Structure formats: C-alpha cells, structure tokens
Image (cartoon, rainbow, N blue to C red; front, side):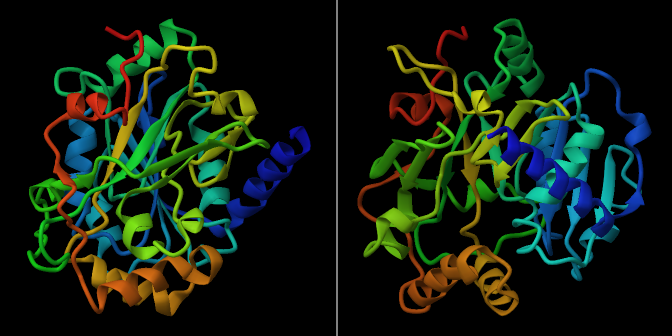
Length: 328
C-alpha cells in the first residue's frame, strides 16, 4: 500500500504540468482556513448557489480545476477573492477522472488544513448543520483525534420528469429535487482498502436494475485533515494511508457521519448526458452515462411510490443514512 500511495503521489506530481494557474489567490489562505477542492466542466448555471452554500457553511477558499469549460464557468469565477483557478485541456479520463489533479493541488496547498473535496452538484449535510457550520464540525473532529469524515452520497430527484422544471441560475436545487430513496442500499467493506462500499438508490433501482453490483458507488470520504503524503485513490471513495478509510465502527456503536445531497438529476442533466456521451471521458467508457441516456429517453422519471421527501439531517439520521455518533 505504501508503494501504491507513492505511485499516486508521483502521478500527481507529473500531472501538475497539465494545469495552468489562471487566478492565484492562494496567498490569502490563512492557517486555519477550511479549503474546498473541486474539478468542474461546464457548470456555470450551478456555480452561484454552490459558492453561496459553501461560503455560508464556512469554506474560506475554493480551489477550482476547470477542465476546459466553454460555457463561461471560468469567466464567472474570475475576480472572486476567495477563489483560485487552474485550467487544463488534458484528458479527464487519463487523469484518473481528475484524481491526479486534485491530489497535486491538495499536496501543494492543503497540507495541515481541513479539506473538503466535492463536485458542483454535491452538498454536504451533517449532524447539527442547521445551526453549526463545517468549522464547528472540524473543531470537534480535531479535539476527538479524527482525521477523516465520511458522507454517503444520496441521489435527489424531482417528482415528475427530470427535465420537467427548468433549473434557474442561483436557485436552490432542492426546491426541485426534493425526493430520495430511503432504503434499497447495499453495504460491504472493501477487503483491500478497508473502506465502506455502498450501492443503491435510484441509480441502482432504475439504471442498473439488471446489474446492481455495477451501480455507482455512494460511499465518500470528502472531508479530511490533509497531509501532503495523503492521496485519494479513486474519486473520494477511498484514500491512502488506509487508516483514513476507517470511518465506521467495528465493535459496536457508531461514528459520526454526514451525507452529500446529490443534485445531479435536474433539467440540466439531459444536456450533460449527451455531452459526456460524446466526450467519453468517464469511467468504463462512460457506461454510467449510457445507462442514463437509454433509460431516460423512454421514461424520464425517477420518483416512485416509495420515494421520501427530504426534510432535514435528523430525518437522515432516523433512517440510518448518517449518524451524529458521540457528537452532541
């Protein structure tokens, strides 16, 4: 595992040449700042709410890697004092789907900071997030000697067709995508890396119903007290050293965990699917996007009679999808 980690760090070091720094505000980063790292492509319509949400939650600086957007995403981010931007035209697939780029940015700028790594359609909720920002959580994690915090990805979707209600720039996406699957999840432990492996939700139920074990993984470890020798190995599903993946209890009790509300399934999704099918830059030849396209062209609705309307984090705790552990 040590050799795998060193190889991942070497790949990140080599990938630095693929990144061009076009806005450098990293000099504004203070020692205790919460940092957010995000790779994006053509997310202009989502950026205003994303930035507002995470600023309100306590993020001090955003480190964006723009994979050659052509919709004005970079122009929107330029001039914002808490944003640094790198641009690349390199292959997303060959960068291990952005992992090499993120590992390099994290190694260079995030050492000894709490770092949140999310996509533009992922919104972290956690115990007491309605009254406490993320730095309150990281203070507690620091005091408890915990270096990593897990969050299960929960796919949110509207009632009715995915493209039935236009998503407007700056809008809270969960005014539209209010529903989720409260059950139908499979959980196991990866015997190599010791991380949890979670599958299920509407993507397994609808898009991979004939092959649920190949459905997208929903386990994430997006919040880490970063060290320059750490490395993500596959998105934010798992890290090295392996001790960072122990985000669960093995001898009774529960560790605190959160959830990432996933706002993928909005009116923008159909266009995004068509673009990604042309680019073929995602995992397994964009197999996931092929499944989306084939299913949605015939029936663009994810809602079913067992769907549950989202209320708050306490609802997720009751359903067993997150836990406050011993944080009170």
